[in-house]
Length: 78
Image 1: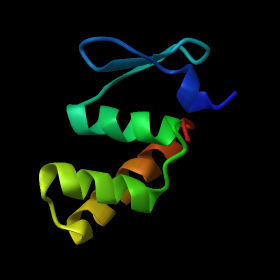
Image 2 (image 1 turned 90 degrees about the horizontal axis):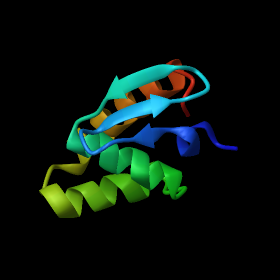
Image 3 (image 1 turned 30 degrees about the horizontal axis):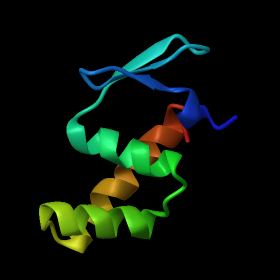
């Protein structure tokens, strides 16, 4: 099973991984990115959707989404 799919996210955007016992505080955009990754969206699809929703430049989003995905990998979540 995909580790991202094991994350439990509460109404306060706190993600908890029951097997690892770790919890992570997410902001609203981080939760959206996680939700899209759970749906197997590509980085480009995520960037496009965030660009359409928030009207942020794709260059900025590329850097931010890449950084976030790197952090997810560092923590063993992606």
